[in-house]
Length: 139
Image (cartoon, rainbow, N blue to C red; front, side):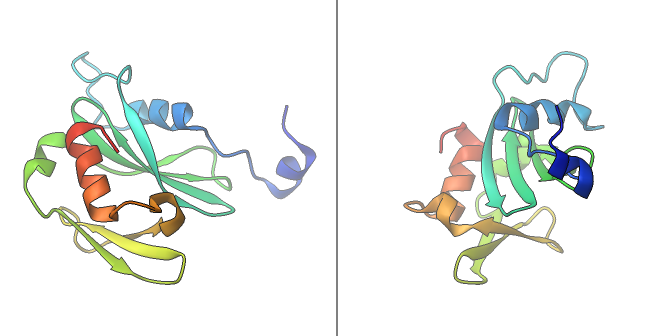
């Protein structure tokens, strides 16, 4: 049941990790023929704010950047790329932005930077952590 606040302000609850992973199936690039599966897909939270969560989802074939904005009907798939593209070294750049926020650039899409929450990567090097997650599924 929708809470009054969500109804009044035209928002919804944020999707959980499982729902975000499932939303990857809505991508035009998702291989519905059966070779790409959600069964073993995993996601890491990249950015967290009051209204938005930004995720990286890894399936057996693709990497998805998904934005969950509570002011929208459902998660938005910003982009997806073949997982093979990320086998090349140095495909991710990170930069400091603010005290609690950094910026990350995926070099297959160099014109766009995305925010990441530093608290989500407390004891990790962001670039190495995300690169390892995409390549191996471990974080």
